[in-house]
Length: 432
Ligand code: SPV
Ligand code: MG
Image (tube, rainbow, N blue to C red; front, side, top):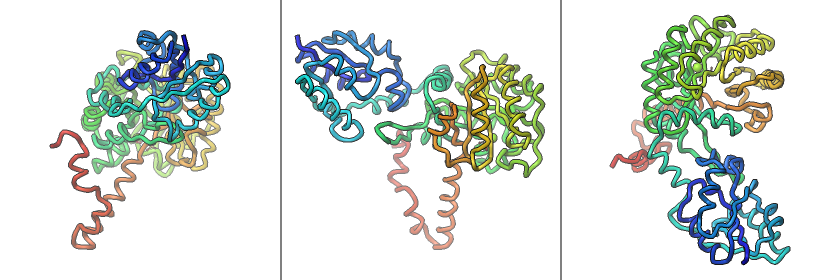
């Protein structure tokens, strides 16, 4: 019997996979090179089913005699070992990012006279379409909540973008780009106190109360499935914080980040221009402990945000606080900085990485925005939050439109910057 090699991810099996495998079966015994979880994460996102689960499914498809790990998009390593008579693949890899892998396959199988068979792409089915369908069905609060922790412990970086209403939630949920052969998207939403307050025309001083913040969060929960991290400001009084934790956990929020400030909170990006008081280490640790005790499951994360670099208290204080907050049981540390050159963040990360009991590290690179994600990952950073960019880009666009209407006495001139009526009508499905 001849051997046939087929590489696939098979995260959600659809008729496209079966078409390829049916064609492969006609040629001989099928060996499936199943992409490892890391490969799937590398080109897109966390797999829905883990390797062993996918292996179980694929092993039971007619014609498949064995399933082996395919630990790269480049099949050549496995092909050289197996020297199959045939390699079968969908014909959708002739162009685009996968083209180079196709060429490598062709060159390598020549060495032993193997043949590449390409099966016409099955129209109307794609993994990203199925993915959208799954998002449409929705997600339970429990599953959404724990998805952040799973991401943090399996993927770097976890990429989070600010969202302050249902529409911006959808932007974070759905925006995708294809770059260097990978599908890039955001992993979840940040409910920024600054943006939530600004969208309501209010200052970022813990004035927008929990009920109002919960309304925003609920609007986003209703139309999205990705994990949500809530900016909890100072967390308020310990006696209040425990209720906030319980409420957010029950709703399916994945994490709250609280900052070690006390008194009237002002936005950190003011730095020392405004008066801000850091909490004592002891009191803030009590808050962390109370939050941990209040939650029902360890899937809900309580992340501690250190303001020492913002408040001018220095690197040693930041590191001392990180140690103390970890001892108190925090699930993650967020280090904040408003320095543009990124030097103090780099120094903090290097020293933080020497901790033996290090927990996931979160940053908000608003000021040091020249630093690329790869560089931040290199520094050991786990979660990157783009904390305010949707509202900051929307506001000037809206003001320009308002000015244009006033200046021209009509809306014609403004309309080049507006999306067509037809598009806004159909932007949200279900309106017809
Ligand atoms: C927010 O987005 O509200 C934050 C981050 O707390 S920052 O504005 O940088 O302080
Ligand atoms: Mg904030």
